[in-house]
Amino acid sequence: MSHSQQGSLFLALFCLIFQLSFRPTLAQRTTTQQTNNASVPCVFNNNAQPGAIFILTPNANNILNSAAVVGGKLNVTWSYSDTTVIPNTIAIYWAYVPTSNGLTQTQAPTPQKFHDNPIATNIAGSERSYVWSIGTLQPGNYLLRIVADDIDPQFYTAINPGKVQCYKAGQPFPGTSMTAFAIAGNSQLVGYSDGFGPSNSGERKFVAVACVLAWIALVL
Image (tube, rainbow, N blue to C red):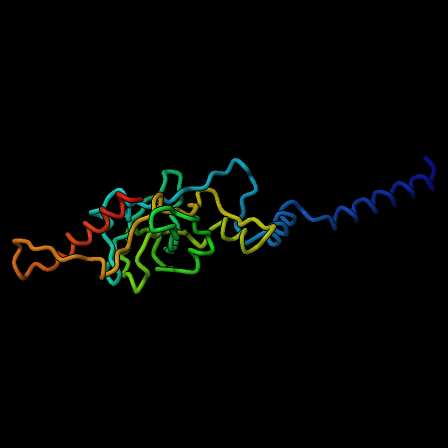
């Protein structure tokens, strides 16, 4: 090989090494993709499985654990799937369920509707229950949505068209009430005579709430 050929070969190798040194690494490309897509950590492996949140109460099929009245309190409970990594924080949201003539659901609430109505947004992920002090809500049917670590892919995509929210393996996806539950207004409560005595107005009120919710459950 002549000196000129050797020189040309060395120059070509130098140019190749120089170009490769400026190519982003896989980690750099992944970081860029993550930055453009959403916050880290991201999962780009389609085989990665998220966890799940299951709302246990309120439950329209369990009147005793779901008796709710405007101005009262309601115990919200939930659990996680076996594959779930316990989150740092939990947020609970409510959404009103519009109905036709109080009987037929006209449309399902969107994720945005839930996020407009936070109940609590900084509950420890290790908790499994929260007592909701119901404010001056419109009597009717409601659903709850529980979100872990602010990861709500449906909501994220709705407000960021064309983007997908990143999540880590085992990240619990939001849980939404399986069925709507009723919140009764005070005007809907009917007093019933009983043998509990004058000091047991709480029992009478609970019986009244249960009766109202049972009637609503029957017509739904």
